[in-house]
Length: 240
Image (cartoon, rainbow, N blue to C red; front, top):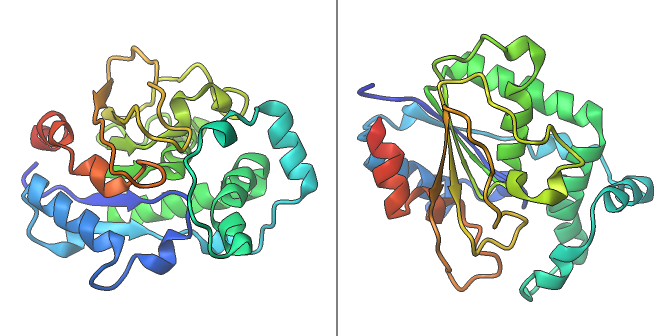
């Protein structure tokens, strides 16, 4: 695979509006992937935007009640303090997105349809999915209609919440084998966004790679820090 095509999928946080421009996170991801995968053409690395799907969906008290009943609030106890400039925007971009995705089947289906469209159009060899994007991909590939469609595709997840027991009530659990070529999971034990737990899977096409880092930020959850980690380079990207 001399020039792999990569589809990147971000997580929560209203990432669409901050991805472009010289200092945008997408440029950092693209630069890192180009370097590690020996890619020359920028067009070989594309990004799926999906924040707009959440605009028309507002998590209400019933959604939160269902979410809390199924899980618990351990995350609140362990979160590092971070400065929040606008509580309303923070709610829209962070907890609301998680609750809305997990509790609203219509929204899930719309996002899965968009993911299918992105795959059909760009025909990626690799999907790099961060945080909520990892959950979206996991559930999409387990759909019955996708059983034999993606045998040559490799999924790389990072900052994934799929290892957390909090997710066991919300998705297919124990973690199932995906019908794809390979699944790598980049794990950081210092990640404070429900993502510090190993994905416990022994499937032949699954491999977890420990990519521990502490960036002195509020969450240790940065998608670029994951993909740029030396072990991610040596155990994942260099295999291509």
